[in-house]
Image (spheres, rainbow, N blue to C red):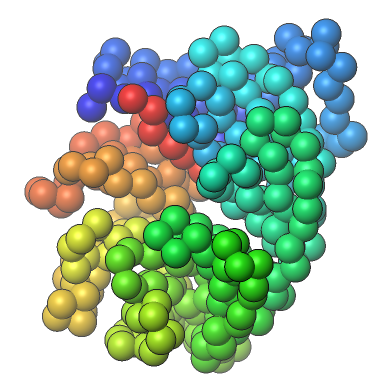
Length: 311
């Protein structure tokens, strides 16, 4: 893989850069060191720890944007010069960040809102209210809509950016993750029952919001990734340290792989490898989906969360 991976380390206010082209060369950069280098820019933080959580990349691979969940802010970093350019206050516990059509959308879990930021000026220009305890957000460019999973609201908010309209899709469980592909939405949910240790995968048609498939899974899963144009979902579980491979065609868990610790975010390189952050082991796991084996575990910073790939 001729790529670099950038990972946010929430537990130590740092990012890790891994160069896959140069034998997995690792560089850890603390947020405080970036702030010290940017003193001439009059940047300041109201409190520490900062808590870098999610991360996204601009369209020309020059800037990265991070959410800082403990500082209730987002930051803008030039990755070529590794320079912190700006910090902007948003809502409480900003957990998800996306870029679309010249705007940055930030999901604030504890404010039940989405902050809208102009990408070029890096100014806050508006807020959208959403349901209770939103945990994830996806933007579907084909329909110009935002989809938000409200974990305490048993619902998905659907925001039409073109027509400035919003509707709510109610479901029976607590949605925590979404994936959108072609005419379908895939929803990872937890059971409504207080002591249940089950998760649910629902497949919903986007044109009429009918649920066409609902699968209960034993175990509490925290993240989900679908292989593009394939009937395969991968799920991670904090609870038992496993990676699950779900066969959607045959409606069953095809395999389980024990990764130890607390496997969290999953990223697919589009070829043979999954990249998985492990919040407890403080590692990035590279997993081969063809032979179902761990290629490598790479030590990163404390409590790794978000990650992106840069060519």
